[in-house]
Image 1: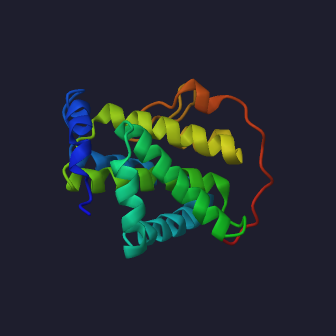
Image 2: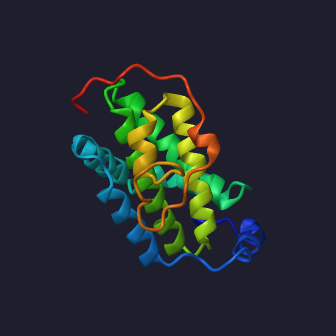
Image 3: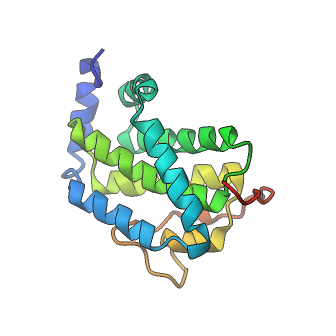
Amino acid sequence: MPLIDQATQPAYKEEAESGPSIAPEKVKQMQDGLAEKVPPKLKGAYDRIVTAGKKIMYSEKSTEMVKTELNRPAPIDQKLAHAATGMILMMDKESKGTMPQDAAVLAGACLLLEMVDLVLKIGMPVTEQDVRDALDTFVTLVMMKHGAKEPEIMGALGVKGKEQPAPSGLAETSAAATAPVAKAPAAPQGY
């Protein structure tokens, strides 16, 4: 089965009409900007989560999951957000709760940007607005699920109202992402 099902091509073409595709260089710039904003105390866990996520993303076992997700009838921003959320939740489950949630949100955003790069390479259009919407949805979903600590995470992602500037190219996160959520117990250090 090809990575993109031909029956879904009209939906992709429709999405492309929403604007020009984001340049791969811009995606890389966004990843680098995010990595620079990771608080020092989260950097080690962030790097480990990103490395593990990339191994999963590019493994042969993930190919079917990627095909299924890309061929499902939904806007590209939703596909990207749900894929990144699923990956982070799966990794958290496998870590038996040892993955620091703050680092997981930041690493998941980086992995979502990696997915954008992958999707662009296979020829699917993704606009800068699609990326912003996917990041907003991802952050909202993960924060709702795990209650990541807002100040450091939301500041690193450049949320409206925070003192820190947004990483290069990252959109301000939606108000829904900053709504109060139940706090999850702190994960043990060591992931």
